[in-house]
Image (tube, rainbow, N blue to C red):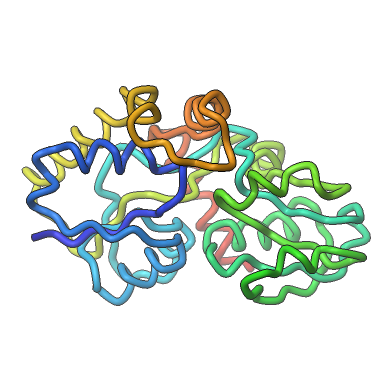
Length: 248
């Protein structure tokens, strides 16, 4: 049995739906985790394959990007935000989402190389969203953003800001192993993921239980905001992001 960790956010719904209805489900053990735990499980070899925040790649001696699919965005993503009550040049401190890895690293890259503002960072704890006030901002990712959007004077969509900075799409998470997996398994796994992406509407009809989004909003989010194809542009963006991480 191949052990797999997948992010348990709405943006992975097509992947989870396809995996759970495929013959492959009998060959795998599927863990559903927050992104930071996906990264931890792969790093410490508790799973064989994981949908990990790409910032983890900078910490791995050896890794293999195993599929043609990812969690990415080409511009605004709507679920990875920096929230603040003051503009960028007035922010003094930033709380970093404990569920995140790529997004908090992206925040540091943007502050240093694009916005060129110096701030102090703090690791956030559950409930930190209530501390966004005065000059204290916060990075929040995933489904929790759906209820936060519109609540603060300033919102910076990090994928959109990266696009402004580089002209490229952004990859938040990719399917990665630390030891090369059998070709036959990866081919089957890739086919299952493709089936999910090709049938997003059906997946939403059967699986969607997102309380914070309507069906129409979920369709909009998964088809217009999330970009699942790990194409050459996104691979180029990923390499650029990793090069910035080295300079932090």
